[in-house]
Length: 363
Image (spheres, rainbow, N blue to C red):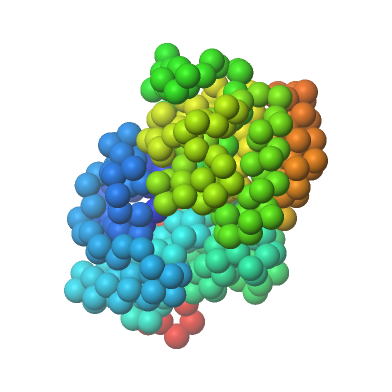
């Protein structure tokens, strides 16, 4: 089978790391198209290096823009590519704008779309990612799900059960496959911290960054937290933090540039707890045995809360500090969710071996 895999942003790169070699080993002619949604070295190139991802066959140079602009440009360029290449199927992963663009482009010209990480729901339509997930799943011919709950979400949305395959969490497989590579890697020391004696934080979602009251509460909580905070921050976010008096001179919050995949895993492994609004980091923390505090109204990774690895808190100082205290005091011996293992890519190839059922009306 001739397959094209769409990537565009950090979470995509992590997920295709184990996937593409497995597809090629199974005999599929598999190429990667990089839309360029994340395009600079810190957010793109370093992940290809860390994860040993094959060089993309095509780079579409979509760049930044509003959600509509980014999705629209990616869709037009993907459509041109798909018309020229005519693969047997297009594989899209996750919930970024490039994922939706790929599903739309493929559906318009009758190429089956396979969605890896299908069926996750936050039930919050104010999240751009939720819109991407919903539309992508309606346009996909095959749904590869990470948890059993995702299967039920899809069935409730009138997706045929024979299109749904519970393969597990490909993000978890990536963590397991790279765990040995971070042994002895002391990334935190390079930034002035000691293992087990800091909090690691990433904050990037609009529900927090676009609301001054949320950012004020988050940063106030960090300033009062029981441990110092190490915070990788994209350069575009630094001016926003500076408005709240947080810069390189802050006594409790250390700002650093974004780091590569392996360094980020090492920082997570060595943190006393993680405070984030990222979906992927909730999963990685769960796999690494590090308690997580998620500052969001909801999460599509509800399984991490169910097993005890994660807790949801409001963007309020008292709620955040209470979540941090609970995370630091709580156990770290939760059970990993079912099929969060190193066999996910193999299950994907097994699902593909059964054939892709075209959408109604497609010959």
